[in-house]
Length: 183
Ligand code: FNR
Image (cartoon, rainbow, N blue to C red):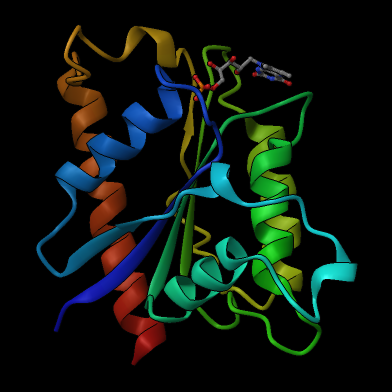
């Protein structure tokens, strides 16, 4: 069996360390996982007034989410929390009321920062919202990727074998989690 995983990267910038990490995670993942890249930067800001006649970007985002069997979040830390872009995507996917597109999908959270504490604050703020959205989020292994500015070479390749091994083990554990939850 193969499972389709929605990849949500919380940074919009071109040279994002989170995007590089997400690329590495996808490249190291077992064959049982296939990936759908979600473009959260195109989503208009959530506004309840638009629920009756939602922007097409919201509708497409929700439809693509519903078609997935799991979720991979790769999040930066903005002021000790997740980015506004990622929170907006979570909100858009959670509505209209009673139609939560995230519902029940197994998830993994990876947080990435050039600082030493690996965006711990963002990682756990994200987990708070995921718990409310009924998203079963893998507890272990955790992934707080610190000093992320030192991890990649010129072409976005991982420079250390230890990082590669860590990310590969993480994705193998995630694949088992996805299989367990999807039954
Ligand atoms: C940051 N950064 C940051 N880093 C951190 O470890 N904790 C924090 O609270 C913050 N706060 C913060 C706020 C804002 C508005 C910005 C723009 C940045 C630094 C951040 O980790 C760094 O810019 C990363 O490189 C962002 O991730 P990407 O874009 O490289 O994926």
